[in-house]
Length: 230
Image (tube, rainbow, N blue to C red; front, side, top):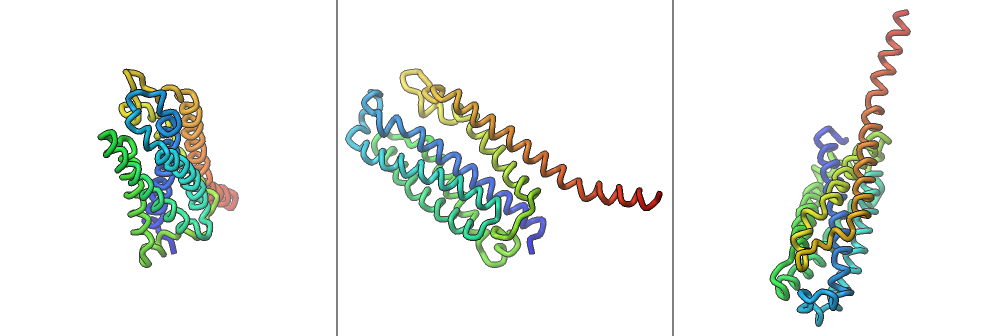
């Protein structure tokens, strides 16, 4: 049976999965320019002979990012098979991210921000592997039916953190995407702001709704007690 600590561990794992999925999706989007428009950036021409590799990795990364977002949704709902699916996405993301990191380090001497994504993916995968141990697995209850307030809490926290990640993309990705003094992340400033802002507002809304649902039983008891006293 899931206890308070198990519930907190589950929330932590889902939040990490959501962050990793969002980071992976952003990583795939950020690599499009390198993979498909290399010739437009003189400083990246060293990658031109290997753009086929980056094109493959970009497509795979985007697919894994979307798969990660879907897996996060299934974890929030407590769907059967959601844990194994999420772990598979994490391991595949760590492998493909590692290949890209090694290639970038070898060709241009820098793997940022791919290295950050790989570290986060590996850490999240380790957390999932730890929570999959028999004794911990029963406490966390990844695939047990969830109440609507529980789903809202997990989903709201995950959406809030993912939204903050998206909103701050220009800060953590800007240094590695600045070419000739221009921060190319700002080209996507509007869509990043809309998506990130939407996630933050949606996350706060879900957390507020979950809080109200949590207070509802206590309110019912108080009202019933008051009615009995009358």
